[in-house]
Image (tube, one colour):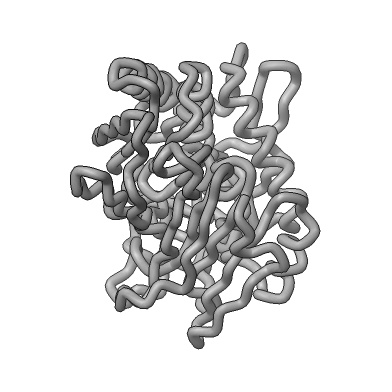
Length: 340
């Protein structure tokens, strides 16, 4: 699944540059293609460094004050959730669970993310597994060159089925187990930020959490959808696709940015059975109703055979994917690119 040394090391593979009315360039995590500015609503945008990446928001609201207030509240929600879900701060609920092996009175937000992670684990045949953390930690420490015995021991601790929940209490089945939410937490946080904007009465917005994208409405406030260019995994500017969206989310996972070893064979996508990184798919982009769903599925599909990945995606209502294989082939699910 997707991992890294910090939240910036979590996959930021969907490049985004929002070209705004004033020509402002947003975070390099996605390209939102330009459209003519609306004449009624006021565009407001802001960027902050959060979760180890650039989090940008662009909204169209009846007034600048409403836009600024909505954005401010959304950033407050992001900070609140990071203090629960981050594995890099020793004081968070997730870190306490990892340190002590159990947690009572768990925050509902942590429970929600873990509940979804269990569903994704089951639907992906175990490819998506939040208990991969011991393997990721080992790969980070050894720069992708772990001792074979140490790797076997770390893999023995990977078992999402041994992370049990009773009410609000969580417990690992074995000493040494740990969880990472790097492949899903940032998406969940982006979704919650979007909900805050909606609650503030903002109908047209984009939340770009370092490449985890949630949009609603129009990029101009007058009907034009958000147009998003999917990043070229070869970094040559040859975008595999450009999609138009009026609602929902899109995220990309790929093994071409964060590596553990100098040879770039061991990267942030890790097979929970072998500890190895896949080589047959360069990138996977997913459209879904929420960013958490797009995040989790993109991670899981990256660890599957392309045929299996397409089959799973087609079985999920409201989901679509685009795979770029190691040979450069582009394989799309049935609904890929449909305006949502």
